[in-house]
Image (cartoon, helix red, strand yellow):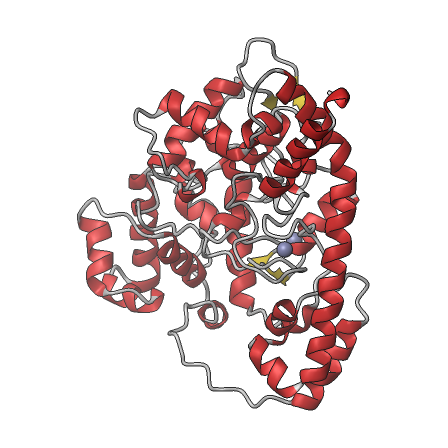
Length: 439
Ligand SMILES: [Zn+2]
Ligand SMILES: [Zn+2]
């Protein structure tokens, strides 16, 4: 584990991963790793932190509903609290907070489902690094991995379920919170219909995050507005209405930026950057040096990055011969996948698979269930000695066998691999009580 010994900090002084790069870790990821490092659940750690730094902790407090890595109150409170407890300075660098003054408060949408790049996680594991979540993944405007040029996903590659990354009481970054499978994998890239604008957007945001560690001073709104004014002057002869049309926002919006204290959203900043050829980082840091208005031909190319109006997707003719062929291929995958996951990869509904490719879909389902059962048993066998040893200790101290006592004694990796943990703990307790001489 990459922790620094620091006797003066309350929590381990974990080293944040990827500072100063486009792959900088998110605060949410840091928080999850911190819980793992202390052999506790994210639920207990969140309650401990919240109790210490926020006045009221509601009974239903769910840490993962807070936008820890964003730009708002939660990011401010939690980066400060974790810096204080770990003695690692400036954990706000794992959030979007450094851009607080130059992006509108509601102008940086954060994705709550928890998206991730299958290949980034696979690479983390293959290279012996701790798998972690990248800050860039938290932004709704990032839809692809710039490094691997694949689409980010919110679904487990094994069970196919959604919200599997971190929304749970016990999280080990990189493992599915629903089925326990590793979330990294080689991507099936037949969905590779990635638009150039998506890659461009994630590259710009990646560069922004790489830059935020090196900022001399925090970016200021006035510098951004000066740059916008200069660009309007150079490209549109000072006519903000023309500029508004160029970047696809209302005329009044540009007026508010220039004449009142309104700040552009991240999306609007991306549109301005794409239309003027300035980088997002330069725009937001108010850095005009070496920017020139693009020449006519160049403008045409830049125009390609203009945000498109949303269009209705026409309904698709399904080629069931081809789908059957793909299903047969899925049957040969070394790691079986669920029918739900197969349907997701083929962009159809699971029930459509059962209706039209019934036999193969059922085979796929049976193969997956058998695999799940084997894996569950293997995990349980591996975890049992840990659970029994910890269980005896807890009971001999006259305490109850609950999640809190177990997370303090059993590594989170082991606990999170056990399905139906509460039933298992009941069995463990019954077994120990049946054989008192084993205590
Ligand atoms: Zn990646
Ligand atoms: Zn899963």
